[in-house]
View 1 (cartoon, helix red, strand yellow):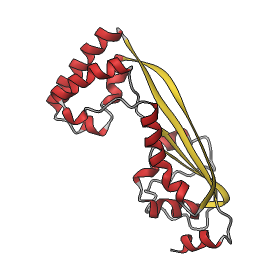
View 2 (view 1 turned 30 degrees about the horizontal axis):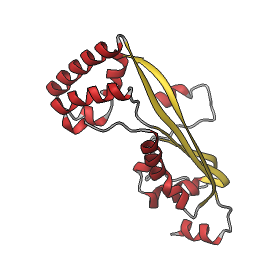
View 3 (view 1 turned 90 degrees about the vertical axis):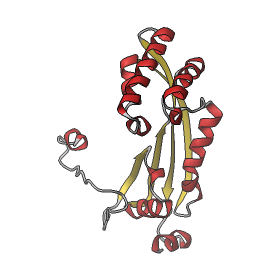
Length: 200
């Protein structure tokens, strides 16, 4: 496991392989619970109380998101033509800054509404990147919708995407993505509202 390999030189780090739903924090208390592009997959009635149980009072729940890498608008529209021809289920409109902000706001709303946390703050930034065409296409194949494609369809799709990208950009593709965080502190023990929700 990658996490175990990365933490080998830290003897006080224990890697536990489980789901948040099944994990029992017992008496352990942590200064932070961090989730990267994952917390929204867990039912909120499980996720937020479980994280609060694991936190010391005033500990932080930190939610991180990276939206998908997007090529420039004109390139995106050219690729959509190929998606429509071979895999229409992968066709999606370009997500401008307002659209991305709206998506991240929806993902973070349960934390803002949770009575277990207070003092939320957030930030977002747009990151510019560049990948070789090989690396970009490899990245695409890690996404679940690509993995679900029939292998022959996927091969044809990737071949045409490669041709279009080479024609438009040469050897590498300019890309952007939005990176954001939302964090809030667990309410203090003794807060009647928070205690009630932890007991439920």
